[in-house]
Each structure stands twice: as C-alpha cells, then as structure tokens.
Length: 177
Image (tube, rainbow, N blue to C red; front, side, top):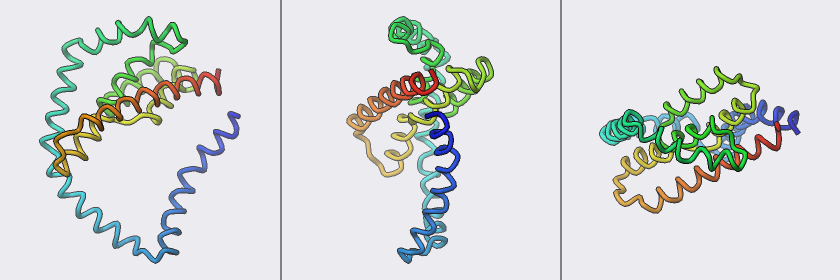
C-alpha cells in the first residue's frame, strides 16, 4: 500500500498540471487570457482583504502569546492520547485552522525534532495537507465579497478540520503503523 500511495503522490501534481491546459484546449478556452484576467482580479482582491488579514493576525498573536493555546492543548492532550493520537501533533490540529504559517512552522519543528520518516513527522505532514486554514479562508474570501454572516460556514469548516485531522492521523497509523 505504501508503494501505491508513493507512486500516486509523485504523479498526481504533474498529471493535474498537464490535464488542465489540455482540457481547456479541447474545450476551446483561451488559457493564457483567462489566467491574465484572473490575475488582474486577484490584485484588487488582495488590496481589499488587507484589513481582514491584519485583524486576524493580531487575534492569532494574542491567542498564542496569552498562553490560551498552551492551556487548551494541556486540557485536551489526555483525551487524544487515550485514543492513540500522539500528543505531539495536537497543537498542529489546533493551529492549522487558525494560521497556515504558524502550523507550517510547527510542522517543520516536529519534523526536525522527530524526523520526516517518523510516525509523528508523517502524521504532521498528512495533517498539514489534509486540513485547511478555515479562519484564513473565511477572512479572505468572505471579506473579499463582503459576506458578514459566516457562522454556518465557520461551523462546517471547523468540523471539516476536525474530521480531516482525525482521518489523517488514523490513516497514517493504518498505512505506516
């Protein structure tokens, strides 16, 4: 199973990169012109979301610097370790929906500490790729289009992050364990 997953992971991105322009060619979509139009819209979007990003970054900094995250991790750790989830990856599960850069830095630290081929390194890498930065996505995309009521999207996004985290851990335990 490990060789099959390794082969799929090596060929997935090049296959997607080749497939999209070919599909557009057969659908007679002007790929380059579409890309340039999207890039023009992206610049205006980037300018409009800067206030939302600054607000989110301040909130994340306060959450981490106040010790609230460490308190939360210490409360949850015995529960997750009881079901077989390594406690070392728990802060990653909490950080990932909040901040992509912070979770990437934490993943890098886990990999440097435990090694990339360790179970913790594999779980951290899989969690990093299997979950999303929900609060960032809501801030950027909802802020860009002016949506103010995001409570249902927030619930669904956070539930999806929990499911993605648990699935990543248990699939790693099955495949690499």
